[in-house]
Length: 123
Image (cartoon, rainbow, N blue to C red):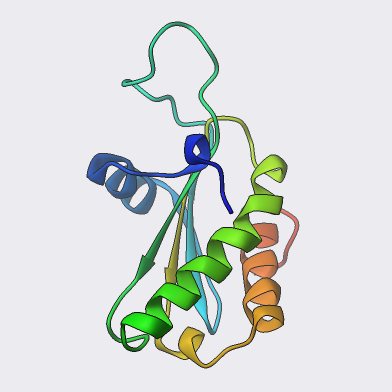
C-alpha cells in the first residue's frame, strides 16, 4: 500500500496538480504531475514529500471494480514515488478501460506516462 504521507487528501492539492501540472495520457489512464510543488500546509521547514492521488469515476465500473482499480494503482505508485522529484503532486485518473485491464497493463501505462512527464519519452 501507499504510505499515508504519500497520499493526496485535500481538494486543493488535486486541483493544483490537475490545473497547474503537466499531463500525459495513455489508453487506460491520464497522469497529472506538478513537479516540486511546495505545500503551504506543511509545518516547519521540512522538505515536502511526494504525494499521489487517484480519481476513479463510475465510468470505470461498479464499486467493486473501482476499488480494485484504486488498490492496484496505489500498489503500483508505491514503488514509483521515489522516482519523482521531491514535493511533487501526482494525480492518476483512471479511464473506462482500466476496469477491464490487468495489473501488467496498468503498470505499463503508468510507467509510460510517468516517463513522458519526467522527460524520458517522445511525444
